[in-house]
Length: 315
Image (cartoon, rainbow, N blue to C red; front, side, top):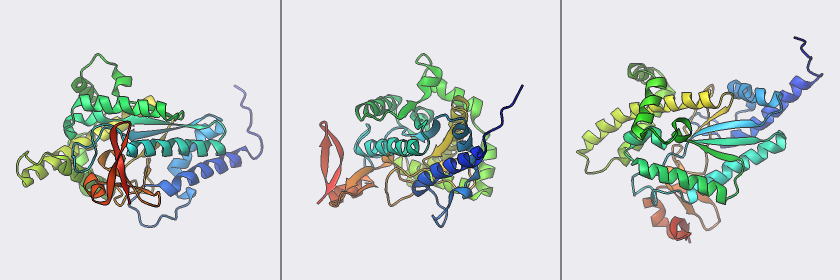
């Protein structure tokens, strides 16, 4: 087969576009690393992920696991449906794709891999609430005209016939790492240990106060955290199989050198906070910040959108 050589300078041009796209993402990087003055060449894995679609003149596809459901803790969120936090986060992601399209004319699209059903039994949120959240998320994307976004969940993989428990079992059995291996990584790898601690904290905060003593709830959260990490890895592998060659984003902090790139959706005082574990406080100067509901309530008044609680406004 005859191979047509690339025109002079083509490789350099691809590198320049990849670096420019990554430079667009870097200000929004979610990380626990010290120092935030990184340059694109500090992320060779991400530059490699970008190189293939840029060289082929194809749209860049981003996959972002997240947007699972609202936290079951009423001290954190306004309810079980998407609100101003999700609306702003989705608009940010669509706008990010628009900015990248200005650098790479074939454009970019974001696949939001809504993972609530993957974790439902572990995070103790009913599957019906997760369905309602995911359906409302799709409606929100449509109503806001966010044409560069799409939602992918277990219904797209296994259809509507199987039960949610059966779907979770299939994902876990096929893709989840052994528990002993995960425990070993948690003991020996600092980023994995931080992830385990962060997930444990969320699960403990979201556990029902009446579900045993504080120490029993802490033990349960630690046990379930390993299950969440197993399923998270499994979901990532499934996404990779269904969206090969995509640029892998994460809502969790990611260290330099990771295959995934941590992305911060909105401003918050906590690097782990997401729109589905919090609500929005709009300050008097227009700045929006994610806070737990109990904190936002003390600082602002409730605002309704389409008859439902949306966020809080200060001043």
